[in-house]
Image (cartoon, rainbow, N blue to C red; front, side):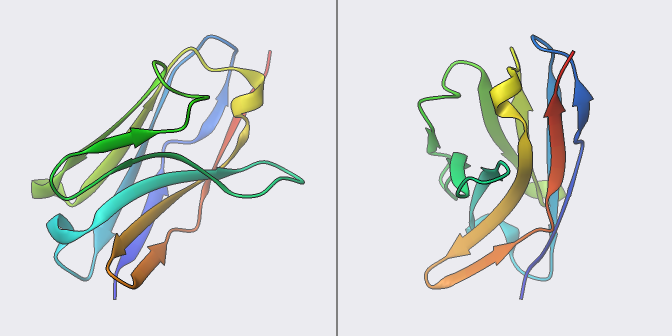
Length: 115
């Protein structure tokens, strides 16, 4: 069992930056692929970016060049550095841990991009 707790969301102006953090507990963090997803009102949850246990990264086209996923296995933490934020980035952002058929989700953190 893995518990995930996100933090770092909030209100930011267009063009601004935020860094989300997700702390994992309950299992061996380093073996999990970690991902950030988001869900805007009335839309399906979508992958934002992910990082495997080996450090391979993948991003949605909409955030490439603006967002960066990283992990610190010593701190059991995965980060999402978001820059050049746009109003369309407004959503609840969720942390995900996956290993084989096991998948776990955090409770989500709200990011609102508005002037």
